[in-house]
Length: 362
Ligand code: ATP
Image (cartoon, rainbow, N blue to C red):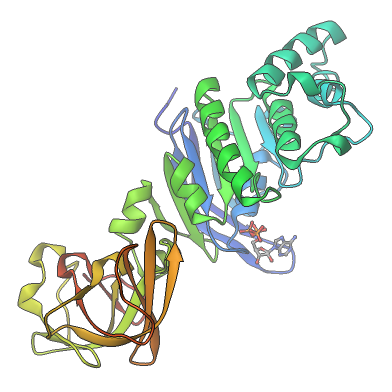
């Protein structure tokens, strides 16, 4: 028993038959009972990983261990996993109850109907679909179908639950509601869950931790807030955060960081945040929009406001700096209008510096 590494993926690689290397030497682990989000843009390899965990795809190399035992040679049905697909994959001619019971009524471990019904009813209660028992999936809303799919995955009492973009067919408001429900549900059942999403807000809101992928490579495997506060590299800084981070091209030369109309003295930066010594050259200075704020005094970045966007409690001031769109996140009452000239100041303890290749150096 190794609860810290209940799921362990070691040097996993997947090269598809056409030669495409979808997963490149990926290693990570998941703690027992955790809900971990696999996050990343379309095509980064999230589904490929889930399918290898489920046994629907064979890895090209590497190992997958559940509870300390390798499962790469174990058939999907013997891996004790539940899989909730993006499109739910419910049987349209069966009722909700029949759909949920189905996994218990087929295969080697099939059980008597009344026993299967009892277990199905337990999980239908957990997922709040008891009253839908006699309905056909075609008569259900997206959110209800989602719950049926989850109940059907849970009846087999799997050790691990895999969910592939389970909320993508729902409207925005329902997504918020169901994602809270999913988190509450998997926590109450205590099942170790891997949840695939391309939506950073979804991942931040429900994941105990997040593993962010790009091009088949892990970019960061961390607690949600660290993607925001301590991004590993330029990709992470730009993938996570809404509104997106502001990026300014700068030159580092003789102890100064120079942008098109601003200069930062390196001595004003926090020495402890440097990842390594900087050589002179071209870098990208990145700052989250809430850390570049309008100020009265001069000596900061000056800009003309192109547009002001309202996002609920806050406003985004959009401006162009050195030919690049950038944003400042201010509170709702700020009276700044499009066309206004403003001065902006960055919180130097919150800026990041990246090399042109995306490596974080500050
Ligand atoms: P999405 O969010 O769009 O589903 P994803 O992150 O889940 O994307 P995957 O479906 O795992 O991505 O695909 C990873 C990469 O592998 C993509 O570039 C995809 O085109 C490629 N790919 C997927 N399946 C195959 C296949 N059977 N043969 C060849 N390439 C494939």
